Length: 112
Image (tube, rainbow, N blue to C red):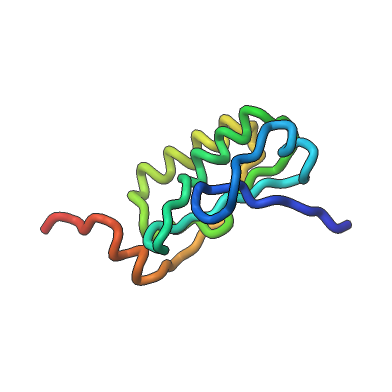
């Protein structure tokens, strides 16, 4: 069976925000992506999906390439757990083991 999903507007170059009813009518899944140094800002994918979870009941919610190396592991684990709980277990966690040089240039370096 073919299933269709949509990408959440992220505040970057993706256009206007979706309303709750358009989410419910549009798809069976909603996806948010992660990037930091691409020349435009994106909304935090886990925050965006948590918000989407509060206005939907059955739609799957997923990250398309959450950039794990760019994040503090403890903070990321807590944010993933929170999104999982808020969504009632509907989170589909897609992760990336690498990122671009531009992304790494935009994160703080650890203190020596």
